[in-house]
Image (cartoon, rainbow, N blue to C red; front, side):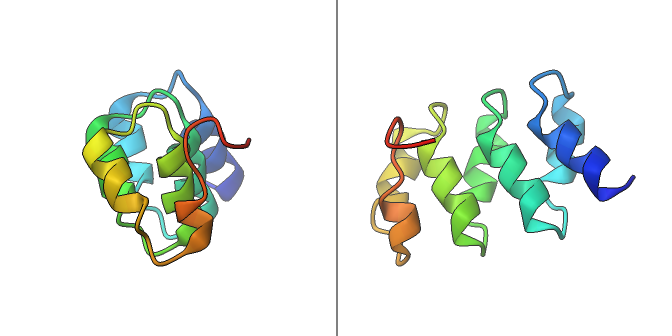
Amino acid sequence: MDYEEKQRLAASEDTAIEILEELATDKNWIVRCSIARNPNISIKILEQLANDEHPWIRGWIAKNHRTPLKTLELLAIDKESVVRDRKAGSYD
């Protein structure tokens, strides 16, 4: 599967959760970022990506309305301001 197909699947609200789980470990951070922005991802994936090495991914997890409060509290004290400053509804 090429990069564009992975990104399309990661962003689609219709993609099966099993495929999203697989893509959540993709080496390309942009694919993982697309998953973090997907409103239908599972809590399991949200929590997994909340620990991602890339701050933009953690930032989109902080913005995702499905992210559990416990995870949001951890992201609120993240070392990166791009993560701390992203909260649900703050910007697109």
